[in-house]
Length: 146
Image (tube, one colour):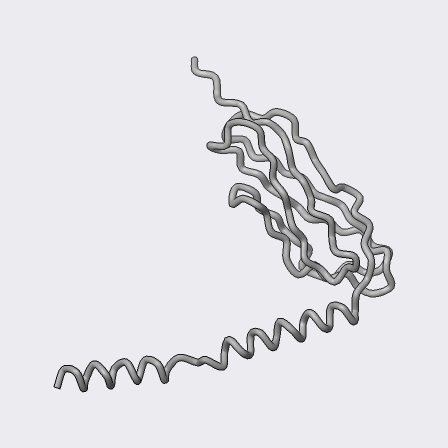
Protein backbone atom coordinates (compact mmCIF):
# COMPACT_ATOMS: atom_id res chain seq x y z
CA UNK A 1 0.00 0.00 0.00
CA UNK A 2 2.84 2.41 0.87
CA UNK A 3 4.57 1.67 -2.45
CA UNK A 4 1.39 2.48 -4.38
CA UNK A 5 0.88 5.72 -2.45
CA UNK A 6 4.52 6.71 -2.98
CA UNK A 7 4.34 5.92 -6.71
CA UNK A 8 1.11 7.88 -7.03
CA UNK A 9 2.60 10.84 -5.15
CA UNK A 10 5.71 10.84 -7.39
CA UNK A 11 3.50 10.71 -10.46
CA UNK A 12 1.43 13.68 -9.29
CA UNK A 13 4.57 15.71 -8.55
CA UNK A 14 6.04 14.98 -11.98
CA UNK A 15 2.81 15.86 -13.75
CA UNK A 16 2.45 19.09 -11.80
CA UNK A 17 5.83 20.30 -13.12
CA UNK A 18 5.51 22.44 -16.22
CA UNK A 19 8.24 21.11 -18.49
CA UNK A 20 7.04 23.43 -21.24
CA UNK A 21 7.99 26.46 -19.10
CA UNK A 22 11.71 25.88 -19.80
CA UNK A 23 10.98 25.61 -23.51
CA UNK A 24 8.95 28.82 -23.38
CA UNK A 25 11.75 30.64 -21.54
CA UNK A 26 14.29 29.44 -24.13
CA UNK A 27 11.98 30.51 -26.96
CA UNK A 28 11.47 33.93 -25.34
CA UNK A 29 15.24 34.35 -24.94
CA UNK A 30 15.81 33.51 -28.60
CA UNK A 31 13.12 35.99 -29.65
CA UNK A 32 14.66 38.74 -27.50
CA UNK A 33 18.12 38.06 -28.94
CA UNK A 34 16.76 38.06 -32.49
CA UNK A 35 14.90 41.33 -31.91
CA UNK A 36 17.99 42.91 -30.31
CA UNK A 37 20.10 42.05 -33.37
CA UNK A 38 17.44 43.47 -35.66
CA UNK A 39 17.13 46.65 -33.60
CA UNK A 40 20.83 46.98 -32.79
CA UNK A 41 22.57 50.31 -32.44
CA UNK A 42 26.07 51.55 -31.67
CA UNK A 43 27.44 52.96 -28.45
CA UNK A 44 30.42 55.07 -27.41
CA UNK A 45 31.65 54.26 -23.92
CA UNK A 46 32.86 57.53 -22.41
CA UNK A 47 34.10 56.04 -19.12
CA UNK A 48 35.44 52.48 -19.29
CA UNK A 49 37.51 52.51 -16.10
CA UNK A 50 37.47 54.28 -12.76
CA UNK A 51 40.16 54.18 -10.09
CA UNK A 52 38.73 55.38 -6.78
CA UNK A 53 42.16 55.65 -5.17
CA UNK A 54 42.35 54.60 -1.53
CA UNK A 55 39.39 54.20 0.81
CA UNK A 56 39.05 52.89 4.36
CA UNK A 57 37.42 49.52 5.04
CA UNK A 58 33.66 50.05 5.28
CA UNK A 59 33.40 53.07 2.97
CA UNK A 60 31.11 52.94 -0.05
CA UNK A 61 32.32 54.17 -3.43
CA UNK A 62 29.80 55.42 -6.00
CA UNK A 63 30.55 56.15 -9.63
CA UNK A 64 28.48 56.62 -12.78
CA UNK A 65 29.95 55.32 -16.03
CA UNK A 66 28.85 57.40 -19.01
CA UNK A 67 28.00 56.16 -22.47
CA UNK A 68 26.40 57.69 -25.56
CA UNK A 69 24.05 56.10 -28.07
CA UNK A 70 25.80 56.84 -31.38
CA UNK A 71 23.41 54.76 -33.47
CA UNK A 72 20.03 55.35 -35.05
CA UNK A 73 17.91 53.10 -32.81
CA UNK A 74 17.14 53.32 -29.08
CA UNK A 75 19.82 51.68 -26.91
CA UNK A 76 18.33 49.17 -24.48
CA UNK A 77 20.44 48.04 -21.53
CA UNK A 78 19.16 44.55 -20.73
CA UNK A 79 21.43 43.71 -17.78
CA UNK A 80 24.38 45.11 -15.84
CA UNK A 81 26.16 42.63 -13.58
CA UNK A 82 29.30 42.85 -11.45
CA UNK A 83 32.03 40.30 -10.83
CA UNK A 84 31.39 40.43 -7.08
CA UNK A 85 28.39 40.86 -4.79
CA UNK A 86 30.11 43.80 -3.11
CA UNK A 87 29.62 45.83 -6.31
CA UNK A 88 26.08 46.70 -7.37
CA UNK A 89 25.43 48.25 -10.80
CA UNK A 90 22.20 50.09 -11.61
CA UNK A 91 21.19 50.21 -15.26
CA UNK A 92 18.91 52.80 -16.86
CA UNK A 93 15.30 51.63 -16.85
CA UNK A 94 14.30 53.33 -20.07
CA UNK A 95 15.92 53.12 -23.52
CA UNK A 96 18.58 55.70 -24.38
CA UNK A 97 17.58 57.62 -27.51
CA UNK A 98 20.02 58.18 -30.39
CA UNK A 99 22.47 60.97 -29.49
CA UNK A 100 21.55 60.79 -25.80
CA UNK A 101 24.00 60.07 -22.96
CA UNK A 102 23.18 57.44 -20.35
CA UNK A 103 24.70 56.30 -17.08
CA UNK A 104 25.37 53.04 -15.28
CA UNK A 105 25.73 53.82 -11.59
CA UNK A 106 27.92 51.46 -9.57
CA UNK A 107 28.16 51.23 -5.78
CA UNK A 108 31.13 49.34 -4.29
CA UNK A 109 30.92 48.40 -0.60
CA UNK A 110 34.48 48.06 0.73
CA UNK A 111 33.48 46.44 4.04
CA UNK A 112 35.73 43.42 4.59
CA UNK A 113 37.56 43.97 1.29
CA UNK A 114 40.97 45.17 2.55
CA UNK A 115 43.59 45.13 -0.19
CA UNK A 116 43.56 45.90 -3.91
CA UNK A 117 40.12 46.00 -5.51
CA UNK A 118 39.59 44.98 -9.13
CA UNK A 119 35.93 44.70 -10.12
CA UNK A 120 34.41 44.28 -13.59
CA UNK A 121 30.92 45.22 -14.72
CA UNK A 122 29.42 43.39 -17.69
CA UNK A 123 26.67 45.13 -19.65
CA UNK A 124 24.28 43.35 -21.99
CA UNK A 125 22.48 45.55 -24.51
CA UNK A 126 21.36 45.80 -28.11
CA UNK A 127 24.63 47.58 -29.02
CA UNK A 128 26.79 46.05 -31.75
CA UNK A 129 29.64 45.62 -31.20
CA UNK A 130 28.97 44.62 -27.59
CA UNK A 131 29.51 46.94 -24.63
CA UNK A 132 33.09 46.87 -23.32
CA UNK A 133 33.54 45.58 -19.77
CA UNK A 134 33.66 48.42 -17.26
CA UNK A 135 36.44 48.39 -14.68
CA UNK A 136 36.48 49.64 -11.08
CA UNK A 137 39.82 49.61 -9.25
CA UNK A 138 41.41 51.01 -6.12
CA UNK A 139 42.80 50.07 -2.73
CA UNK A 140 40.99 49.44 0.54
CA UNK A 141 42.98 50.03 3.74
CA UNK A 142 42.16 48.70 7.19
CA UNK A 143 40.79 50.96 9.90
CA UNK A 144 43.34 52.44 12.26
CA UNK A 145 43.02 51.19 15.84
CA UNK A 146 43.13 53.88 18.50
